[in-house]
Image (cartoon, rainbow, N blue to C red; front, side, top):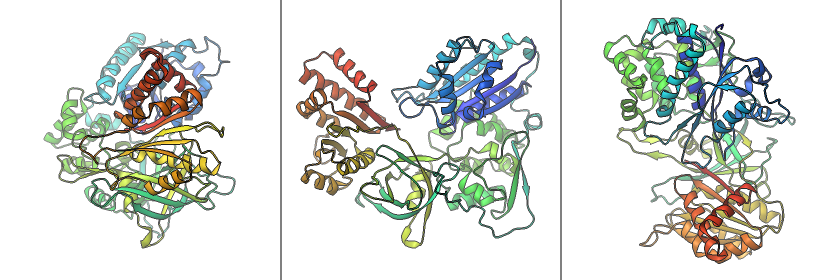
Length: 600
């Protein structure tokens, strides 16, 4: 059997599946295989019929949805017209990256694996179901899965087993065999060009990830009391002339930027001029990143593209080790790259949330040896962040509003940890001059009923209330007044978001509001308790009036607790058994009458 070309295809929303796919590709190349890595939607899926060896790495988004860069592939592979044996030549493997705190854990990987088998493909091993919730993260599943993958592959292609793979610590060989994806070509002439100027979409072009709309920031207001531990912002953008349209439940997307002090430190560590201009050239057939202008300044690359403030993945240490000439640093980096060193890496990096920039500072000799050509291999691209839209165009024409909790917390690190996007947004001050934030809008997972008489029940504690503010503004403008909102926070005086608006809606007869202020009395009260207390009302709305039920907020315990409370409502008011209550909930979910949008 001749040696095959290995295709490693990925569907990635946050970059983790892409990183894992690239890791598999590196392992394949060290075994001297011909490897191609592609996002699923950049691969011509019609070629799958003639492939012999494919590995697919994919995550699950939203409520069991495929990532954006595999949606076309997903639609094609599930076409009913595809013949049952069409993939009989294919040997494949599917690795799923998920989080078991979500109900649809690794749903996409499971469904895809089953579908490939239906179409006649042979699977090299069972579907891998990596879990972020594991103490050692996804690698607890990925490492043994990869060991089995290569063993099964060698059994299938015995000639591969004869090749002695390059060890990860054979630095000069690894660099020789694994060249950088891109090379930097610095320009002598330094022009004062605004290479980062955005193209404003025309009437025919809706803003997108590649062509976001430069919206003007109108206001950035803190809505929590100054004595409250959490800084939450109500932010408003002007989208006049953008061609942006959205409905309740939709989300706005944006790319955050690295802090100026981090960019400065990074340039100092690498001894590189932030104003230097360069062009990128791919070393193989890879396209140059579309988001980077050509030519580009180092500052633009560091500030807007490389994710230097993220907690680095294992692959970062693996590649960094290839540059280490200092014996102690090399030994430590190799340990962090190995399967045996994952607990040590977790203690050093993941637990204290140490950033890639801080790691470089901890390994000064290796950082001094770092070749600029490898920057795009070493650091992942900054991923776009999404926020539920908290306003309706019917109430606020040409405006888009969001509610943002600024992420700041302490670990054992001296410097406090900060969320990249929320901290960047909080730093923007429209009172100090024009501020532009490039953004675009995406369909969200929540869908609200078109029928005027269908009641909606919304449970949105904390910033989870954002999509429900949008829904209430939209529904009231359309004359839909059967609205119930359960809102929870710590204190009525400190973090009761939009309290005065809810009051006005109640006075006008457009809203029934139930609040749970958990810290305003001795015994803590949460939204799920308010759901139980209003069992009679909820049963009437759901059983007799066909109400839809929505949950939005933190994915930890709240969604499951609210669903448990709802099942108790069914048992208490409907006189059904626990099993029947569960079935009712499942039926509501299946028909779209129970929807949730949660995040961790």
